[in-house]
Length: 240
Image 1 (spheres, rainbow, N blue to C red):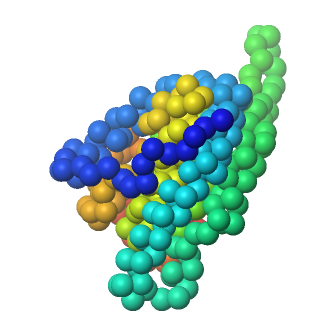
Image 2: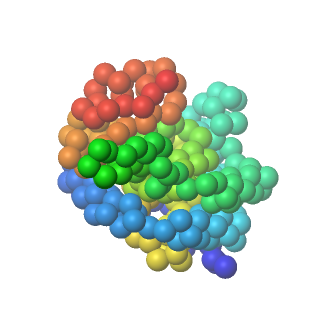
Image 3: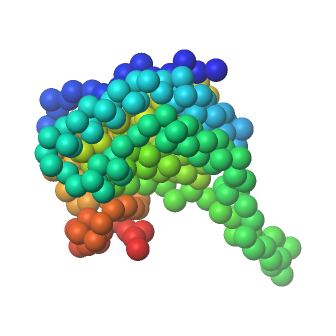
């Protein structure tokens, strides 16, 4: 069983944002080649180990969240925004349960969607495969870090997560648990990466300068975020 995360804050990084994002993108592309062929059992192990790490590291996650919440209160965020940001023991347990629930899902990769014979005797199959590297841009809910990371991992897609600055410490603490799960299962930590800077330039780089590293962008948040992503992205967008 995992013993929990070793850190509760995103690492400081003085690398210029474009270079930082290129490094993250290159690492995700390298992880793609590993994750695409990872067996179901290994992916599930990573998710279960991450859930165990989250429970073991609950105190660190809550401490990080209290720092985020205090800073948000100081900035005068609304009660609704504060509630989206807030974690407690029950919410952390629910995040861990969500990781286990994703592990229990059937693996979508390798499913035969259709098959037909050819006159020459060959059999053609349409098989579900990973999309590639996914970029997810979201706002204040720290649970999205776990939800998005887990779903992408199960579907064989390395993911680059860029959360809101309001929840940066909370997301980093949760991400450390995901990294612990990946390491315990023998998968590269770079299968799930969290952008370690609050600089908004990182979003612009993801949208417009990483088409060779990111295959699809998924925005999760309010109308203005979704509109910006759909307007500026140079890769396909899955929005709503």
